[in-house]
Image (cartoon, helix red, strand yellow):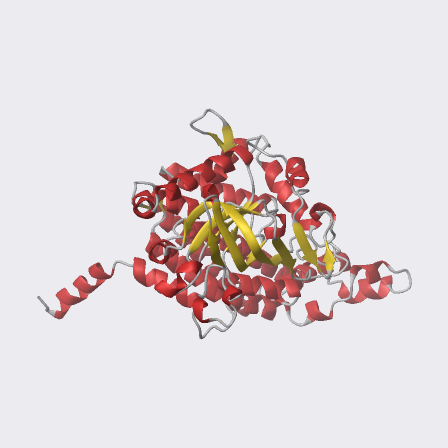
Amino acid sequence: MALMTGKDYIQSLDDGRQVYIEGEKVARVSEHPALRPMVQTMARVYDLQHTAQYHELFSYVNEAGERVSRVYKLPETIDDLRMRREMTQAVLKEVSPVIDRFGDETVTPLFVLTDNKALLDQYDTRYYQNVQGWLKKLQASNWFMTSGNTDPKGDRSKQPYQQPDPDMYLRVVEEREDGIVLRGAKYETGASYAHVAFVKPTVGVWLPENRDYAVSCVVPMNSPNLRHICRAPLIRDPDPDQRPLSSRFDEIDNLMVFDNVFVPWENVIFSRQPELAAQIRKDLHNWAAQGFLVRSLAKADLLVGTALLLSEQSCLEHLPPVREKIAQLMEYRETIHAFVMAAEAQHEPSHTGMVMPNQAIQNAGRHFASTHYYQMVQILRDLSGGTPIMLTDLKNAAHPEIKADVEKYYRINDVDAQARMRVLNLAAELTSTAFAGRMQGYQMFAESPPMVQAMSLYNTYDRDRARATAARFAGLT
């Protein structure tokens, strides 16, 4: 089954996985009210690849002559890089501009590892073979691969091996002839309705004592002894009219608990290799950051559109101070767009000749998109005023005894109460609901903290060129 349908995807989740939410063990992920909206959203993503409009963009013919998902296509040419961007943009346009986890971004560490064959082979030739095996397996299955990135961390002043409980970071507790055994936990988005997770180490200092924590592998989400402990949904009794984003696009985050989870060797990318982890970890965003920037662009577009609707409905769009604020949102949007297109236009070769976005431009872009998002939300909050947090609900607008009151006090000229309330509800979802808060936190930290992003920019910037220019004009030899 090279290209799943939405129906195939939904049925595939009935696989015995252990998912817990709000004190309940979930019988069927696809039917639980907190998880069903995102399962249905992912099903729409799968169905897009079967439409006439997007079939060629979302798929390609691999070396075996099979038509498979473009998500797993190595970026060997500039067209591959461009089509990855356009595929992600199509999902954000047709399904939702505010979803982040749907597999295109989280598979890219396998590209980085493919690009580092020589390095992997120095440690164990099985590692590279396993990477290639998983790329082929994903092509054949069309599985949704999420990430397994963030450890609970415990006492952050201590290294993993120094923690009172050694399982605060995910670690290898046993290496056997047939595989490894993992214990610990990882936080991740969408893991409860994904098929597999690419587990990667996140330790910052790769001391020899942290050897057990230097592990990377691919883990099926229905593995025995793997438990998914979900956060509570952001909204109760979701109503798409009242909460247009959180009712449909609440990407449930969860803690994946590895309680002696067995991973066969063919699924192991590397095990107990701190030196390898240190070298690989810094490159894992080489292609992933493209997806993050494209998502940031879609969110910025939604901020601009919402601001325009608000100002038009309230008859303030002609005022220069209002236009100036909207122009700041537009500037944010266009700056991200410039980073996306410039990184693509100034692409650079990887170790093995694959095509990467320009790393310095891309890293500058992701730092900009992350650190300025809160300010942009604040501008929209300023434009929308206090009404979104005092807004009545649409059910009141339909009640026969108060319908006229709601219509009178929410109408503005030709804009009736229903239309105005819908725009205000969208503004609330972007500025003042739990969904807005979660999205701001995700935007800030999902691509690693801003300081780490800044270090990535520092490391990929052409410092020798800049230094040489300054030295020449300073008169230094």
